[in-house]
Length: 91
Image 1 (cartoon, helix red, strand yellow):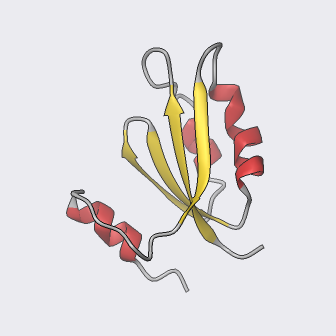
Image 2 (spheres, rainbow, N blue to C red):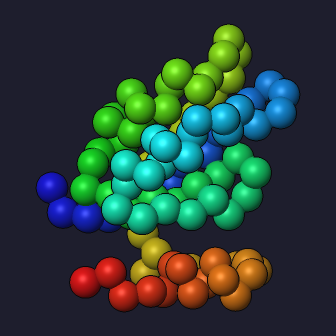
């Protein structure tokens, strides 16, 4: 499978459960956390694989949403470092 961007968003019931989650995201070719509950990953794995990796960080009544992210058409207000990460050459 070729590389693509995936968006990962959590809905935790309390404080973000990020202890140990960096090691999971480090399994991607590249990733960035741009909000307390949102990540973008550059990966050759599918959303199902990422769900299996991340579901241990979910408690009762908590959710995660993972989807392919097409960044060819985009707009928003983010820090320059985020735009630099999105636009960096990955070839």
